[in-house]
Length: 420
Image (tube, rainbow, N blue to C red; front, top):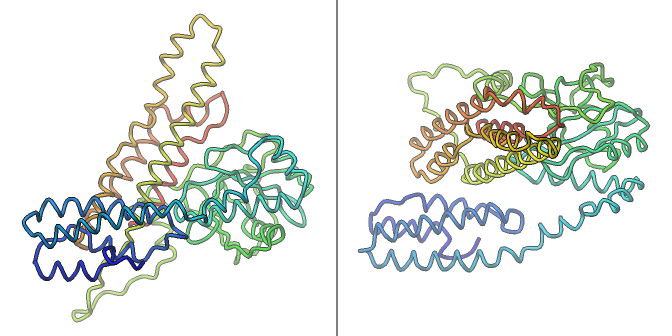
């Protein structure tokens, strides 16, 4: 980035000259300098918004220093000019044009052609890869020889349809299915399914290579993170576990990993080298520097996950009410169905608020403590969500499959891991 008033050196010079306290603006400038507007318009927009907020606060705090307030006015103006240019970036719009047709008729036509199927799969894989810490997207894999079939939903709250499974059968010849969710995790396409079938990682990697030509990094894990398989190193070719293999359309997407206090710590402990005791003269290793983009994307991902969960609860409510539309007890059911949304009561704004405070903290040691507070809140929210009285009904309700807890659990668990 070349904008003078959005760079760190001039601001650093002002800080040194007037000896006033910075509120995180210097760190925001550094984070902005590392971003590419063409590739990361979303994070860029959020950093610019953060810069504006910090600049306004600093103006009020240092109103007596004219040179500083004038400079901050220029910063705010430059943010406005830069933000106005962001919508002109065509990259995201170009991505949208490569996706599958929007109408059901066009989608059915697409499924009839193998080349279009490959284009859809390629688009889905690239979309997941481009989202650094996104909400998991449902997938279905068709068990077949010599290659598995693989289908990805277009978005997190989209269900795998019978037509899509039929298309996989026609493509691969298989009739058994493995259903789960896929997310970008550990810089790999990570497929989450319970339990993990033998050979799934290796077969998915082969299928992706066959259909798209991409040599993707593939991982497979269970929802608790206790079983993790690397598609590059897995030796088994055949799947042997039957529970996740479905011939119906009602398979349950696996729940994501639990809080860091269980699965994530166990996973980290299994791969991390044991540190040796520090000698008396050994230097103290400073805390890991966490990018500002982690805090920004964490907030937006949490909001998106809660929004998706709310939409699914609304969909469940509509289905329930439709079932009793002509019944005399409709009003009673309508009133009681509002309690469904109590399931999300543990997911309040505490994590987002503390995350914002941590992201703006200029002191690394204080920020480390704030990160711990965020992780404690994450653990509390996950526990509250999983132990909620409505959780069993929502998960095993007789009205259909609704992806409600999963986006929240995976998003919170991923953020917990990033801050560890």
